[in-house]
Amino acid sequence: MAVSRRVFLTGSATAFGAYAVLPGVAHANTVAFDTQWDHLTFRRLSPNRFELRQSTLTVISEGTSSILYRILPPALRGQTSASWTWEVESSAPPSDLSQIGNDDRNLGVFFVSMPEQDAAGVREGTSISRLLRNRSARVLMYTWGGNQPPGTVVPSPHAPDRLRNLITRRPETGRFSETVDLTRDFPRVFNTPLERLVAVAVSSNSENTPTRVVAHVRNLTLG
Image 1 (cartoon, one colour):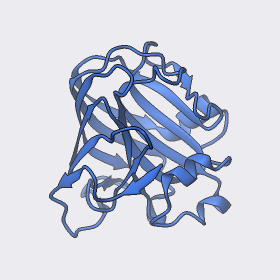
Image 2: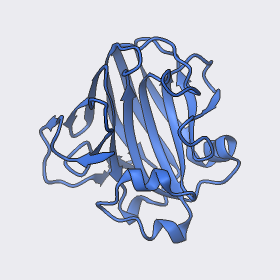
Image 3: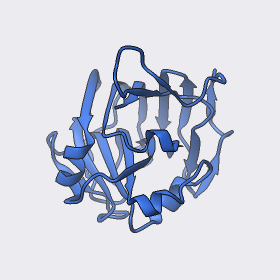
Image 4: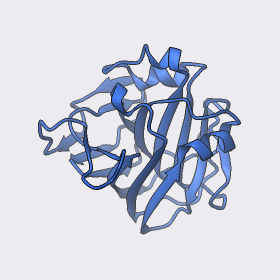
């Protein structure tokens, strides 16, 4: 696995930083799609194309797979809820997310939780591949895709104890707004509480079909 801020990352980022308090909303912060995000690519797989435009992230996955992620600053690690709007213009077909080689999906929006003592060692520049290998980390993936009904929990075949899909939308086109309670969903999916929220990520997979996914994530907010 390799990390890059250059390859297949485009957009108009500004210097306003990775988050800002939303006026009129207590304890809510938007996570801007700016230059603070990193791109995790995989050997032998072509990477997705990500276009970052502050409030909007566009993902184009055409027989490709990779993850865009952001290490959260300490000020946001106590957040317990999230909201975003996502849209799929071109969809991957149904897939079995429990099987390697058949786990294409339109979008995954990831939230990474770690115990406080481990989270203290996570800093800007920490690779998400290191977090994914850490046995104390739990990665909850709200997933648009698969072949199960919404609400189904599907452990990832790559690390079933630590990475799990919560099916949120069926594999079809459309646009939806989501609001999630991480303090409810982490215990339900992992049987352990949400601890410190250290990272967020977005992925798309289309390397197995192959197919072309065009999708957007907008207004990602933590609260």
